[in-house]
Amino acid sequence: MLKIFVGTVYGGALDVAEQVAPLFEQAGYEVSIFDQPTLDDLIGSPTDLALFCTSTTGSGDYPGNLVAFVRELEAKSPGLVGLKYGMIAMGDSSYVDSFCGAGRSLDEVLQGQGAERLGERLEVDAMETFMPDDAALPWVDEWIESQQLKVA
Figure 1: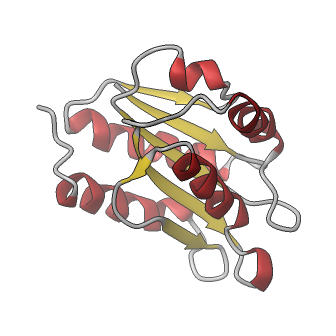
Figure 2: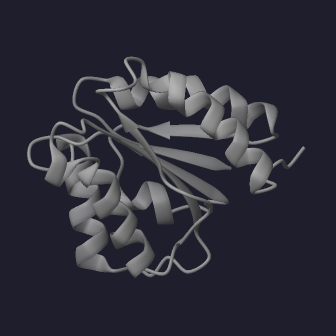
């Protein structure tokens, strides 16, 4: 089971999640997308692999639909040893100090709980990439290959 957790303001990150899901299905995963994620979605049932796909809002802040998830994660501190995940962070490099801030912060929170990020974080810059899935699709293809994530 691959779970994709989405943090989105205008739907861009959700669109990316929906675009990459078939690549994981082709690799043998059953895929669930959570666009109003809760901590229970992550730890309430087995998660073989997670992909976090989040945009950044304000001054490097989490999108509204992700705030409760992150607060609950920090408050309950469930310990995520054994969780393997990938991170697609979306931002706008014209906001120099807070570029991809939500994805970078979430990365720190997850690793602080013992989760292991596989490979590098993808940072999609809205100043360079008009359609985020143009960057996400090849990255996911490469990620599945380089991390040997095929289960089929």
